[in-house]
Every structure is written in C-alpha cells, then in structure tokens.
Length: 357
Image (cartoon, rainbow, N blue to C red; front, side, top):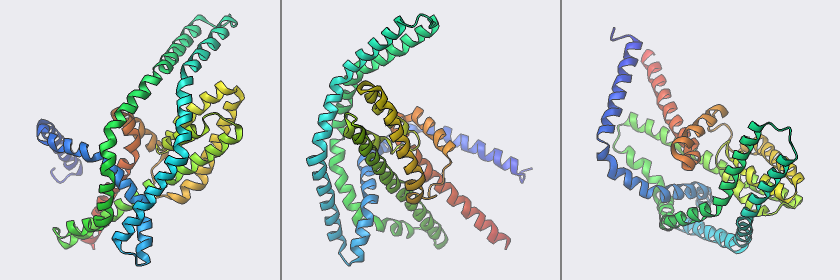
C-alpha cells in the first residue's frame, strides 16, 4: 500500500500539516527575522523596482564600454533629472488641483444629498424599501465624503514614516546595480554541479518574470495615464492631471486597477456636467482597448501567462488578507510562486524522463 500514489499524497499532506503546525508553535522564533524583513521591505522593493527600470540603460552603457561605476553614476543622474522635472513642472499643478479637489469634497457631498432629496420628493411611486436602501447608500456616501479629508490627512501622516525608507532606496539601488550580478554565482559555489545548473535556470526564470512584470506594468501605466490625460484635457475635465496621475498609479493593480481609476473621474465629471461622465467612460474604454490589444501583448507578451479568472481570484483573496498592499503585490508574488513551482515540476519531468531512458 505504501507504493500507492494516493497513500503517498495522503502522507505528504499530513506531513505538510504537521510542519505548518510546528512552524506556528515556534513562530516566536521567527519574529525577529520577520521584524527585520518588514523593516527593509520598503527600500528593498523600491530599490528592486528601480533596478529593473534602470538595468537596460546600464547594459546599453556597458555595451559601449562604459565602466560599471560610471554607468551607475549616469543612471543616478538620469533619476535626479527626472525627479527635478517632475518637481518643477508636474508637482505644482498636481498639488494645486489636488488641494482644490479636497476643498470641494464637502460641497460635492451636499450636492449629492440635495439631488437625492429632490428626486425622492418628486418620485412618489418609488417603493418605501427602495427609498430606505437609497437613504442608507446616500448616508454612507455622505459619511465617506465627510471623512475623506481626515483620511487623506491620516494617509499623508503615515507617509512620513516612509521617509527613512526613501532615503535608503538609493543605497539599495547602488549595490544592486554594482553587485547584483554576483549573487547567483556566489550561491552556486555552495552547490554541486547538477543543483547549481537547476538553480541558475530558476534564477533566470525568476529574473525574466520580475523584469516582464515590472517593466510591463510601468509602460502600461504610463501609456494609460497619458491617454487619459489627453482625453481629459480634450473634454475639459477639471483636475485632469490629478485624475490621470491617480489612474496611472491604480493601473499597477492588474485587472482591478482600471475600474478603481475611473471612479473619481466619473464623480468629478458628474458634478461638473453630467454628460461629461459619458465622455470619461468612453475615454477609459478607448484607453483600455488600446492597452489590452496593443500595448500589453507587445510589452508583456505571454511571459506571465496568468488567466484573468486567476487574477481576479488572487486579487480578491489578497485584498481581503492584506488590504491595498495585497492588491499591489498579489500578482507579482503569484507569478514568482508559479515560476518556482513550474521550474521544479519541469525538473521532475526531466529527471523522470532521463531515468526511463
């Protein structure tokens, strides 16, 4: 019986559950390591993102025989120049529009209440149950709008805690660019030849997956943001730059991000002029069609190869467990795990085939 596949699977499942239980019982042992990992997570992730963004430029410079340290210096100068341009030309306009938007939020809430009240007074045929449900929705929306300034202030205050992490990001980026290529060879020297070869292939697969996702999402987000900005400016939508920047940030969340991005734009359009909401929806549809049929297939290709239903399921689960951070990192984490599992499964198939031969 011990050679039966079902029995082996059952025993493996029991051992896995026992291992999880054991790890849970000694979780106090891992607490210092988890605290350390949480402390460096933000600068590490930020440095890794900038690393993948800047690595093509470094390879281009090295192709023309520019020394590595000189290439890194050029990359930092490019980032400094980009930051200067953003602060000089984009940030003041966005800040002004954002301040005006925050100031108008209470007025928007009052307009919603007045509109619904007028509608209810002139629609006697509406069932009482519908009226009650509508009043609850209006009250919830009103409470959210009233609390929005406080929430925004709270978020801004929490961002102050990331200042130290922001300072560390350039240091992480520098050493990733300088010594990142040495990590895999350093680890391989502790492995035998067969394991080292497998590890090298796994490292390349993970690198390709992360590169495809980060660069792909960056290009897609910038493309969508620019298309929306141009569209908003054409129709004369207020706070166009702020809303386009918000859409650009939300678009890094696969599948769900575009729907979250259009909500503030539609609300602003409704208060400015109701027909504008239709124009905003049309612009968003055009942007998403261009992105889905033209940009994403050519940028990401089939590198991630994740079914849309899987994306929805993973994002819903991650959002419930970890909130916004779960939405943000669910898909890259899933892609990494999928790459690792696929690699070991392929290794198992190859070893099994070699054994039969």
